[in-house]
Structures are given as C-alpha cells and as structure tokens.
Amino acid sequence: MEKSNDSLDYGFTLVGFSDCSKLEMVFFIVNFTLYSMAVLGNSTIMLLCILDPWLHTPMYFFLAHLSFLDLCFSTSCIPQMLVNLWGPDKTISYTGCVVQLFSFLSVGGNKCILPVVMAYDRYAAVCKPSHCMVIIGLVNAIVMSPLTMTLSRCGRCRVNHFLCERPTLIKMACVDARAVEMLAFAFAILIVLLPLTLILVSYGYIAVAVLRIKPAAGRWKAFNTCSSHLTVVSLFYGSIIYMYMQAGNSSSQDKGKFLTLFYNLVTAMLNLLIYTLRNKKVKGALKKVFGRQ
Image (cartoon, rainbow, N blue to C red; front, top):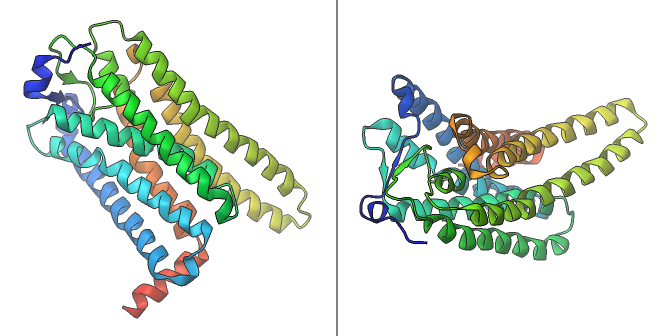
C-alpha cells in the first residue's frame, strides 16, 4: 500500500462543517466555550490533586488521570477544528494528520479502559492495570495509525470530517481495506466492548448491593450516584461503538461528526460535573487552595 503523492505534498482538506457555512461561527463560539471550560476545569482538578494533601489518595489519583486524559483527548483535535471554523483555510498537513490520528487513538484507548481501572479500591491493585491501560492504548495507535495512513487514496484529499478520524480515512481508500477494517474491529472489541462489559457487570453487583440497603434514603443516594456515573459511561461508550464498530463505508457521516464532538467535548464536561465538582472533598479543596491565594 502506497501513500498518495497528493496527500504527501498538500495534506488533506478537512471538510468539517463547511456544508453549514452560515452556522460555522455559531459552531466556533459553542465549541470554543465548551473547550475553554474543559481546559479550565480539568486543569483545576489536576492542580488541586497535586496541591491538596487530602486528595493524595487512589480515588483522586484516578480522577486527576481522567481529567488529564479528557484534556489531551479534546486538545488532540478541537484546536484544529476551531482554526478551520474561524477562517477559510480547511487544510491539515500529512504529518499533522498522522500526529492527530495517533494521539486521538492512543489517548482515546486509554480513556476507554480507565473506567474499568477506576473500579478498584486499592492503589496496589490498580498500579499494574494502569500500565496495561497505557500499553493497550499505545499498541492500538502504533498499529492502526500507519496501516490507516498508508492506504492508497488515489489522490483523494477531502476528509468528510473535522479531524483525521480512522473510519473516515479508511472510507477514503480506493483499495480493498477489509483487512484493516477487521483489525480495527478486533481492537474495538478489546478496547471498547470488553471494558464496557466489565463495567456493566460491576454495576450489576453494585445494583444488588444497593437493593440490600434498608434505609430508603441511603438506597436513593447510592442509586442517584451510580445512575449518574452509568449515564456518562453509556453515552461515551455508545457513541464510540457507533463510530468505531461499523464498517468504514457506513460510518463517519454527518451524524458521526456530532457524535465525535459529543464524546470528545460533552463527556469531558459531564465527567467534571459528575465525578469531581459534586464531590465534597473537591469543593473543600477548591475553597482552601484558591481561598488561600
């Protein structure tokens, strides 16, 4: 499989939302606002977990890790999208596309597996799974990025998306890409379906334990907390499954663009609200750290 000379010389044109040119400025304002809030919120959480000794526990270690992944995940593609929305230039270099695809796949893989690791209570129990999570995410990116980028595209340089996303790039190929699609599907099972299954099983056990709580108030509090967590997990994995567990020819259309925005930006905001900003210790740390300043 050889790379297209056109792609190497001129890169790609990210079509993005250019078919809705009248709404581009609206998209820019909305996404810039969400991205700014995500950067500010996640950076604040990481800073708090470093500065406040009371947050030096396994639980907050993983909340800080989740904030870091959310920040990296959004930053891998949103700034480029904002540049494209702001002006007439919609291009991205071949190297930029490779870097974006690699970072998107590696960070996204880690983010898919992290909720499973967070289910453990003790730091000793989660130390090795954390390394496993990083390794799986990197292997996915190291294998799939070159395979996707070296597919022959016969001079096609228009990417029907606002980022170099794998399903869209596979769809652009002018050769038989079924082998790459099957490998991508296998990685999706490992990185998406397996963690989701483990999460749902763990929540099944949690549901049984919650039903055994006799005080109705305690049962409702536990149910409220778990349901909010499960909602975020379902929205994130649901959109990922739609995007990455279909054939390249049937995914990443207009609906896919909005789903990518959803699991990239919206779930990052929901993670902030549900996992951290509602937490009493985090609220106390905010008052203590910034109040002291």
